[in-house]
Image (cartoon, rainbow, N blue to C red; front, side, top):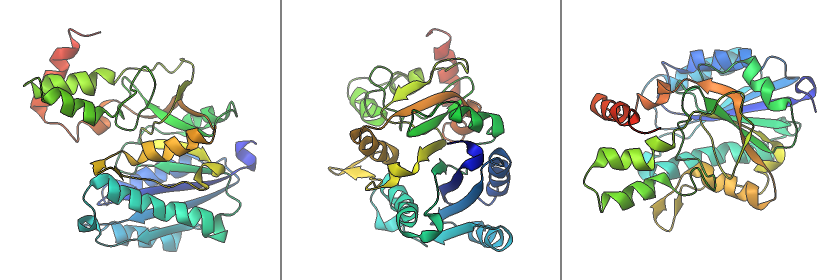
Length: 279
């Protein structure tokens, strides 16, 4: 199936994105112009800015644009990933029950907080040079960042947060434990590399075939522990015998665009110093 004959649904969860949404959305529109038809569905919750007003304007101005606002739900969940899973399951339900989306062939899941600034038509088209996949995920220049959602038998087989908590029990250096559990796994995947088969990934953008959403849900908590909702969703896909990959040419971001929002200058400096001694 070619891009020109395919219908694409772009989905995502949004919260307090009034400063990023317009640029991110416009970029997504430009990057997906060759698809036969495009639909847009976003799920909002807990925003304290003008996100809902912006979404309402887009709904009035753009064909096939829909959004669902779940209101203030943060206090209903113990863990952040539980809340996000709840929001994601809202679009899963729509995909499976709303007749508007009955002819959708591919679902593109995206973050809209600035991570997809380098996404373009070329990077998306690179996902369709082959058809032996059910889900394909983005890569970043210089270093792949989304270790939390990543599962690969050699690269990152376990939950990096649980690994970090384990090392914190035995080593006092939080910075070094972060390096060991997270930063050291942020390897560069050259764009000319072969596709990497994974058990789970995300990286801010992923394209799935429609069948991945049948009898599948996101889960953000297991046995009273927070878990990445992408891992639980992708685990079901793997159990069905489907294939998931990171496509090195599916570039959506540079290295620091997402990292810099989460870590202090001091932590980034320690990370930079450590990289001088680790190859």
